[in-house]
Length: 144
Image 1: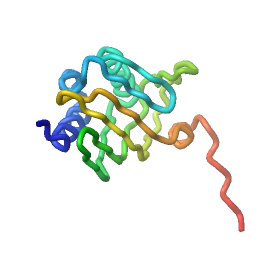
Image 2: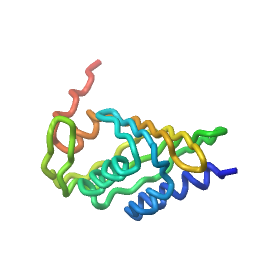
Image 3: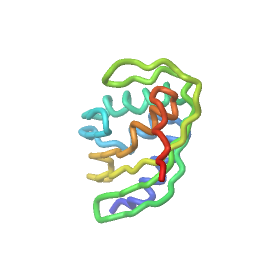
Image 4: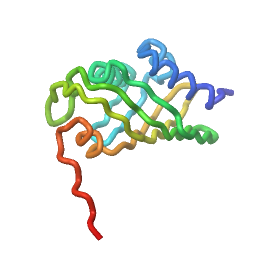
């Protein structure tokens, strides 16, 4: 039986090393990844998705805040931070590097099959990310 906590820890370590081959080894051939802006299917598409984040944020790192392990699922609450020194690919087109450092929370729900990640759903605040990149105005402060 697969130790899901250890699998999740191995993924975070591979991400922080930007080791796409190690991430592939933890990913099912038929994986489906869903984030707020797109869905990718298959290991090669998942690899490309992750590579695009590494290209946009070459110093990207994950810090885990909380991890909940179920029978076939791991929920990870974490902080991703990095500096945008590369092109950020989006469904609306490519965004040139801003040079801005971003730091934001996200939550990932990963289902495991045969000891590999078969499904991942990533939740993060796109408005916060775009605001930190300087691509959206910061929300006005509330007044009493």
